Image 1 (cartoon, rainbow, N blue to C red):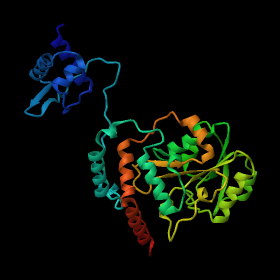
Image 2 (image 1 turned 90 degrees about the vertical axis):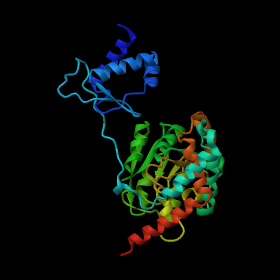
Image 3 (image 1 turned 180 degrees about the horizontal axis):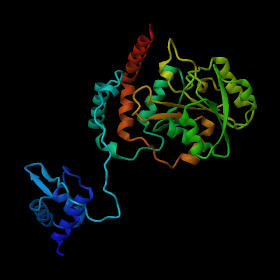
Image 4 (image 1 turned 60 degrees about the vertical axis):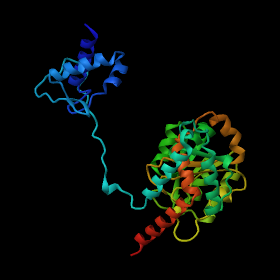
Length: 355
């Protein structure tokens, strides 16, 4: 069999098997030639034969497309016809009325123009300095939190950061989590091989009796907004958590500060991280709620005493967030757009709650 016939039979077989379904555009002649290791002339001749036999048709300036052939039985195969998933189209009902689309996409364009080749380089393991500096400045300005940039770790959302906590602290520890809690907290810890103790959640946080009785070494809490109960821990409960950590060497608290940007009314409550004087609180937050669910980007503040352990366990891994998103978010925060967005969103959420 000559090369043209071999290419023809291969493409014909793919058409009949559904690899190229009716209406699909075949790869360009150059792309197909590179893929099959033949000349462009060979592919051109094979395409012409497919067109002559009615398997494909040529559209001027558009390419070569697969024809629909009703009643044609596919060749014998060990595999069923390839079925493609329905593709997602625009959904006007899913549009977020609070998201600043124009500002965000303008920021993306500016970053692509200014940083260019830098954006395709490998990201530093803990995230780019530009974003870590912007987060540190924002936290100090808005939350009064002292978070040195060299201890801020950028990750692709809270779930990836939960996993980082387990990899850093180890699976030999017992992790105490609220019951009920956000389902992904338990899923990630359990999936990472960690031992879990469920601690009863009351209207103001984990009940004292459960906290006193647990054998946990690590306490994962959502003191601002526990899900699904909506419980917020007052100052007294937060100090109780910190006192729990001090009772036994090596205890650690993971503060999951989800939703804290939307505290209503007034200034947000002081974080456990800011109240801590022992360096026992690992702080985690995400931009998925404050910006958009598709924004898989969060950050973790590692206490100074845990930095050597972080470097040992996780220091060799790459950051999971593309540099384009990191630089764009850094610019969005640094130029004030993020805080303007938060102010507008808080205002609209407050208005929507009013009777």
